[in-house]
Image 1 (cartoon, rainbow, N blue to C red):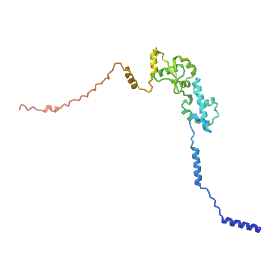
Image 2 (cartoon, rainbow, N blue to C red):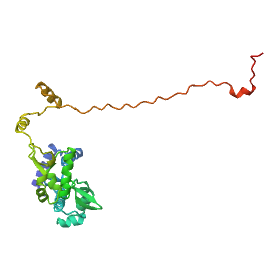
Image 3 (tube, rainbow, N blue to C red):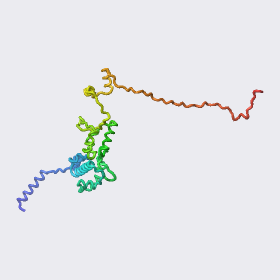
Image 4 (tube, rainbow, N blue to C red):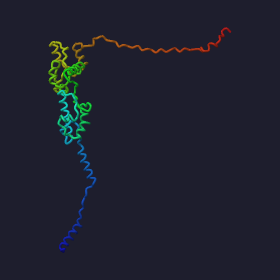
Length: 276
């Protein structure tokens, strides 16, 4: 080897020994903590189980809830068209063009999604739509409205009727003479009441104006009665015959008087000594 090269090598070795470099290795604990933090970040957002929020999910979860939403929508449409026979899961998937779903999604639909869904009812392993109201035709709808009126339950939401009653538009037109439609001011939803024609009677306009101009919002019965008394108007009281409560006689238990008995069983041996 050339002597000049040897001198350069020795000079390089001397400089390396004079200025040593130390390599700092990463500790294993630091790498472990970093991986734990990454796992926490990834698991901090749980998957939602709300079918209405399936669009915000990703991957398999979105696919599952999309299949469920299509099934519920189809079962509702069948019910509104008057289809009352239940379907198996395979028949539902066939009618909704979802025969390509995987085995895991199908198992999830059969064991969790459909049995736990409030809009689906299971009958002998098959499925039907579960409406808000148990009505099938004009007769049952009118009967339900009359029952609500008699019991003081009020009206029924039109959207519940539309969901539950097959061929709703046609039947509601037939019931126009027997119902009253009221728009609720809070949310503008339509409420259907039974029209009891037996309580229709003419009311003079004077009383109608008094009724409409008198506001009793937020007043209780006691406040209304007090207001009427101040105006010199006697409030309606119960004028029927007052029935006194029947008092039941309490039977006193009779205690038998204790009878002091002599030695009657010794009468045959007793003797009278008065004459002695």
